[in-house]
Image 1 (cartoon, rainbow, N blue to C red):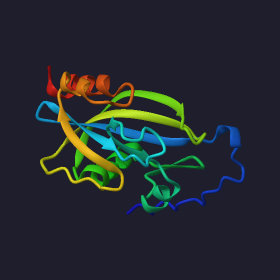
Image 2: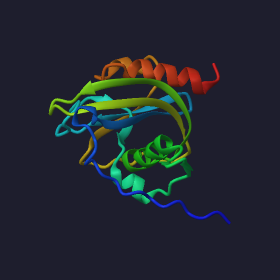
Image 3: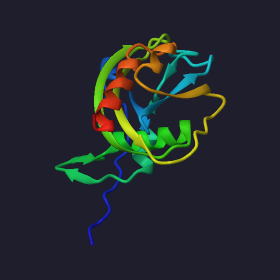
Amino acid sequence: MPQPIPVPNISLNQAKPEKLFYFVATGTVYRDGKCLILQRAANQVAHPSVWGPVGGKLEHKDLKTMPPTRMNGDVTDWEHMVESLLIREAKEESGLDVYDFRYLDSVVFVRPDGTPVVCVKYGCRAKPGEVVMPKDEFQAFAWVDGNEVDQYSCILGVPDEVRKTISLLSGK
């Protein structure tokens, strides 16, 4: 039986401030020919009251709560951490369980508060279930197809992400 891999201490003491970013992953959730979009709450720092996919930030605590998967020489690895982040965020933000992740795109941006962000975007499938959102983070939700999404005030790029997800996951 393999020995568990110890979680290293996380420290930013040696990190170079000019190289620090938030890491965010988003998931355009697909089911039955449509994708889920959520209207962000008015109090959100980035994109208040605008429509977008589920998603969230990778946090240091994620490295402490999820066991490492391997040692890579003297480096500790967590494989599939982005997918695990999307599973957690989709559940927290929509109540849905997701799987079958497909890379869509990436973007780097700076939030209005000056925080730099690296964002990777995925399409994913939703298992059956009802959408249940936290009211403090979101105002509404909608299931949209590639045309309906244009009727919503979305974060730039989201309509294309919806269309690409539908194309990738519908088999068309």
